[in-house]
Image 1 (cartoon, rainbow, N blue to C red):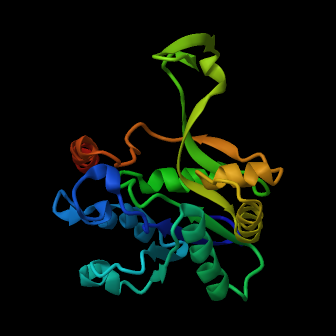
Image 2 (cartoon, rainbow, N blue to C red; image 1 turned 45 degrees about the vertical axis):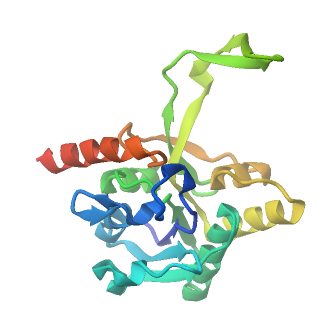
Length: 240
């Protein structure tokens, strides 16, 4: 990275993963000889220009400490909150505590349930994101999009919308530390739901840049997603 900025990653992993139906937090499910969370952390550890990684865990978590990766010197575990935004804020405060000596600190927020992101994509995001507004990995929508209109028994098509305008948000999402903290705190104060960090930044008046990601950067949400993640990891392992 040819920049004077300091980079940290925040990985919220405090959710319950109830849609997996496994009875166990999905970040600890086995995936190609590791846990899912180990795959999600790996590309950030590979990027030596990232100073540290704050992993936000639930208060009740007892499994992460049992993993060999828990002893990595660049991983800082902290306790998160009930909602994603609370957990991300907890992670950002930990970053702030470790970076008081630096003026330009940028944070990559990444879903713990995205085990297939590649280090080269993280590099490209940092190169192409706007210095002031930030940026996110995303994919342009290729399917025809319909806006639905609910009725009493079913949902009908209201209109076909222009798919050229729409992108599917992924992570990591990259923003300046202080700007993102203020944006999330403002949403918290106003009781606004935050589904991703970019939405909080948008409400604060920023226009994050869309950086093209990969189809392989899936979010593991349902049981069948594990098989798809295994497929993409196998493909990555076969690359020269």
